[in-house]
Amino acid sequence: QVQLVESGGGLVQAGESLRLSCAASRSILSINVMGWYRQGPGKQRELVASITNGGSTNYADFVKGRFTISRGNAKNTVYLRMTSLKPEDTAVYYCYIRSGGVNYWGKGTLVTVSS
Image (cartoon, rainbow, N blue to C red; front, side, top):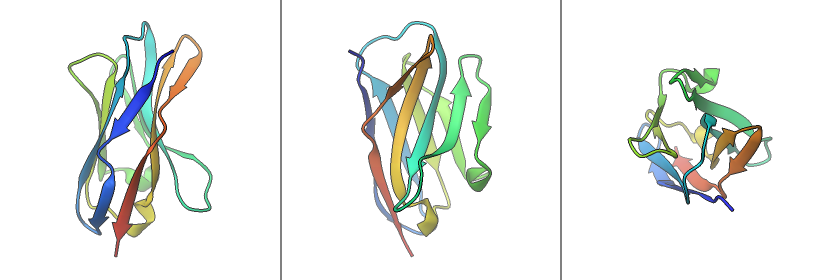
């Protein structure tokens, strides 16, 4: 059973930065996509950013220019650098890995941005 563990969430003020990390508990073969979703209070889960095995990235419009997704040197790790954070970025952030048609999910890390 593969587990994804996120870290790096916390409470920050508007305008500050955070870096989220996600690591898989064991090697996953044939990763297609790695990425981050988020779910704010009373909202549906939404895609934040993703990165393919080939390195192509995709960002939601609401984070373009502020967030950067990257893969770690170690396989099965993915990061999300978040800058210029806004109160509306407050959410639980979930990492996911897609491999062979299977989606693996972390349990989430809470990011709270105060105004």
